[in-house]
Every structure is written in C-alpha cells, then in structure tokens.
Image 1: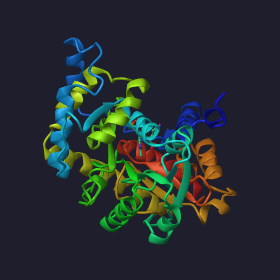
Image 2: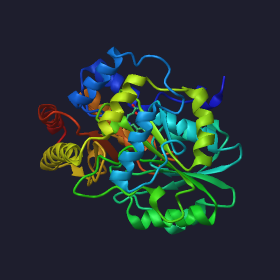
Image 3: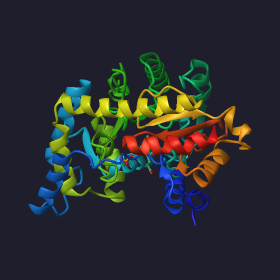
Length: 384
Ligand code: PMP
Ligand code: GLN
C-alpha cells in the first residue's frame, strides 16, 4: 500500500459530517448551503439530461462551457483567456488541483504551501514526490510576510499553492500580499497554482483579484475555479482550470487519466449559469453576508470572540479563553465536545495546519437558513 494514502486519516469534513448525522447535530462544519440553489440552473441540467447530453463530452470540456468560462472571467476579472487553449473543465476543483499538482511537481521539487491550507493539497504534493515548504500564516490577519517567503523559497522551489480567498480563515489576501508573492514567483521561476474557488463569495464590496492578473504572472499561473461555489451547488463537482497553453497542456495530460471528463448535462447548465448578470452575484453575496452577520452578531452577543469574515461561507471563533474554561485542551477537543454535548458540528482549524502552529480557532459555516442559525445559537448559548 502507498503510505501517502494508507497513513492518512479521513478528511475532517467527512469526520464531522458523519458525527453530525449520527448524533443528530446541526451541521455547521462542512461547507455547503442548505438552500436548493438557483432553480433555472438546476432546470437547465435536468433539461440537458432529457435532451440527450449523456455520452462522453470532449476531454477538455464542452466548447459551450469553455467559451462561457472565458467570457465570464473577462467580464468579472478582466482576463483574456483563449477558450481553445487556455481553459479546461474538470470534475470539481478537487480534480483540478490534483491534475495541476501531479502535472507540475516532479519528485524532489520543493512546493511552497501556506498553512492553514485546504486539506487536499498536501497528500497530492507528497504523492507527486514534492517536498513541502510551509509558510505559517497567523491570526487575525493571515497576511504574507516577506521574511517568511524568503525562508521558504529557494532555487529548488518549482510550485507555490495559493488559496485566495482563504478557506478556512475567511480572509482575503490584499494587493500587497499578491504583488509580493508575484515577485517571489518571478525571482525563483516558480509556477503558482491558485485555488480561487471562493472568488465570488466575497463581502463588503471587496473585489477578488486573481494572481494571474498580476504583472509577470500570466504565463506562470494556473487558476482554478469551481461552479459548486459559484452556484451554491457543491455536489455538482464542475471545476475549471485556466492557464497559458504550455501549462494547460501538461495539466490536461494528468486530467485525461484522472477523470477524462465531467457529466455533460452539468457542463451545459454551468455554461448557462456563468452568463448570469451582475444582479445574481450581488444578490448571492448579499444573502450570504446577511447570514454571516446574523451568526456573527448572535455569537458576539453570547460572548464568543468572532474573527472578521471577508469571504467564503465561514466565520472563525477564537476559543483561546473559552476552551480551557470548558476543560478542552485544543480546538479538536472543543469541536468534539461541541458536537457530542451541545449538538453543533464545527471544524477545528488545526486540521489545516501541518505543524500544529494554531490550535485555538474553530470554523463555523453560516450558509444556512435563519432558523438553523438561530437553533445553533440557542445550543451554543449552553456553553457560555
Ligand atoms: N478548494 C477549496 C479551498 C475549497 O474550499 C473546496 C471545497 N469547498 C475545494 C477546493 C473543492 O472544490 P470542488 O467541490 O469544486 O471540488
Ligand atoms: N470545501 C468544503 C469545506 O471547506 C468541504 C469540501 C469537502 O467536504 N471535501 O467545508
């Protein structure tokens, strides 16, 4: 057996969702909205299924979707992408990440990873034979720091993985962070794999700025997106990879033997949805921001210490004082107590740190109906 996978625990998202189901807890752990998603996009998928979109679509994705992706990112982020040579459709961002890392990392290459990091990155980097070089980001701002980058980057660095907006901390990197990272990528001739699945779920008018748009990054960035997040349809698993032709070509070679392709009816529906006007995106952000504010205000009112949430479906609480008072040594113990004794599932953020640097933060998903958030707050009041 391959130790990279044989020695891995189950992902924290599955562990907490199983516990929530088994214990009948309110699940604010794994990030998924509890509304059904846009009816017209779902209807398009059903229609396409009935109309016969059921055989293998092209390996790179349906031409209509690749064109829709290029148009979408031109409109929203000012990117000029050639749908024929710079856009590929994958089965979720998860596959896009695996294909990109397997294709771009060779054994012995150093890969810079910012922790906290989404839990899919490290096992794939290891499987590719990459040597992780961690940069630890710390609360409350989780900003990049020049000295830490200088320590992590070297002549052996080939790839850096950036997640912006950042899951699990709900923060966004600023232009200064991104320009700094762009300089390091150019100085050391490094390719950036940018997981930007949360690019549309941003709050308070903060625009998402893709690293691929920064000076000198167009030819050395692989940008990854996910329709699951854009349309709140997380089970659909339709992802996108966008990169200059030489990079996309090699990533497509990995994709062809990971999944080869993605259900065509979903591709057709995503192509339709990507053309939605600005009102859809404004409304989505406003709805999630309202839920964020509801949960945040409720938690603050109960006496929890809530960190600012700039993006994603999540907010973070600092249990630094509360944990010890409740007899919980760390965030993992706290989340276990929360789900078992108080009926609310959450995610311990230490699961995203490779070296245990931060153990006092807990992530809660607010993409839920008001009644669900209120019921969770009621249960959480029992802790205070
Ligand atoms: N990257 C990040 C940072 C995520 O949060 C997620 C899922 N929420 C993914 C990748 C996976 O996306 P998908 O469901 O499209 O595979
Ligand atoms: N990305 C989702 C989250 O952060 C979960 C994805 C998964 O379950 N693998 O909660």
